[in-house]
Length: 274
Picture 1 (tube, rainbow, N blue to C red):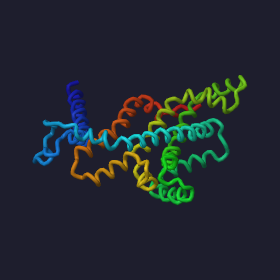
Picture 2 (picture 1 turned 90 degrees about the vertical axis):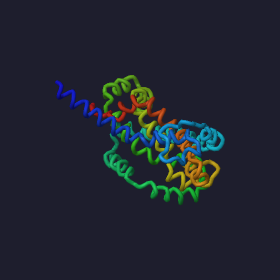
Picture 3 (picture 1 turned 45 degrees about the vertical axis):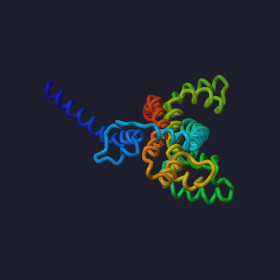
Picture 4 (picture 1 turned 90 degrees about the horizontal axis):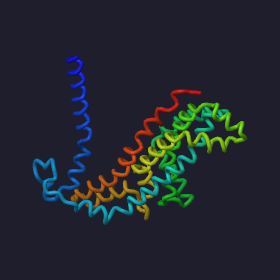
């Protein structure tokens, strides 16, 4: 027993050390966001902001709020569009079994392997003709193309595990396919909906390739471009830069913590087939 405890304790210690190493950049980002400009020139630097300041966060509130608001609108719009497109598609592939469904699933899987910069160039050429460059709607559509293939696969796997007897009971009560999907399948797919929504929001929130290609220089830029421009314009105010990064990370971190239970259930769905 003592040998097993020592082995378990050793593994735990290694895990804690590796986690600390991986999270150290996050800690340093928070530390610098509270550090005064004159204290950043110390060698070695302080591991704790002994003379902390909120100047960086005041700068964020003064200059970065429009970027954060735009990112929030783009993220929520991407979530809505992704769920609207992928949930019915996943239901059709899982339960209606259309002809060519296997080929479509392979195409969706292959679509995730296309580099984002290639898609961005294609969107640029299309949006130039449609007049959607530097628009929030255009960026929502572009970000959705990253999330929809993954979302369809998640919904397909989850909905495949729904017992067919429930669908047959709904059909016996007179419900058509659309009513069955809306009243039976979608409420039972809550975990998948939360999982898809979370990943769609995170992808759109952290997107830089589409943003820099399609809306750079426009009136509505997301926070990724706000940070990028801010580094270029204020490369000496590191506390403000890191404070911007901290504030930009908070929404994604909070959502991930709150939704982790549903995500764990959603990504492991489909293990039991009907």
